[in-house]
Image 1 (tube, helix red, strand yellow):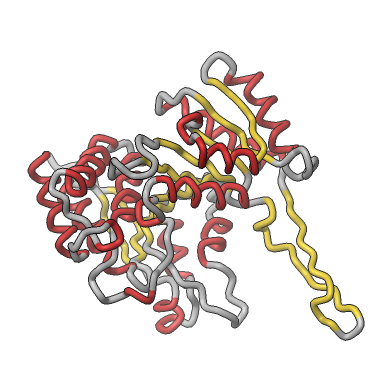
Image 2 (tube, rainbow, N blue to C red):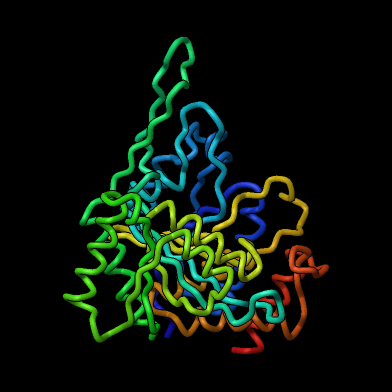
Length: 345
């Protein structure tokens, strides 16, 4: 009896997006993923064909399926277009941005890294409340930005981080903040975390708090002291790129955006237009995002098969793209990965 199909929205993306999406779809097909795809446009391609980088029909599709896999998108420069990723997060209240960083190729500067950064995705300094004040003929004499964090917004991401850590059998959650200086904006986040831990999570998992600048230093000097990190929007953006650097860069970094109304899975890296169409892009991040999507629909066994196949392709078969020191094209890497999935299955 065939598994029940799960409707999902597919957004190939810009630049290298269609090439790496082909790899992710091949891996999902090889593992027998149950997704039934609705392919939809977004990004620069959509702007040319639909007049909008995030067309209404794409949003409607995600509203129906509540699940999407998307390639990297390029936001048009100028013309008043806001970041497509930010629009998606706001539209579907995707309050949790989860970015795992795990060593895939051993023997580097850092080894045995296994970290998860849980980033608040809707609030803080990324809300875009910014303006200039003109003085004496200089229209940009003063720049001002207002950050907004709410108790409810903090609760959403903190609850997700604690529950996610406990469900995965993790040992510790570290809250990262700057409450020593930004006493209101990040103080509310730390205060809420401490209250929630005392009321709901004490005895279930370890808890600590660290100031963001010290956290950056500690991650570089001894990343193994951390397990799950949870923080506000801007700090999460920075820390998740830092942790990706510990495991080989953004080419190895998947991300999930989880909310009340939908879940969207993606590679953390951009559209890399300089290498688009050359067949040399590394699809690992998007393949791992597809594995996270399987975890989300309670098919973790299939997600684990993809992750194991990625590891075996890179380390046993030694098939790697150029950014990882190998010579394989995107297609050669994908073929090796699919063969691994089938052989391991």
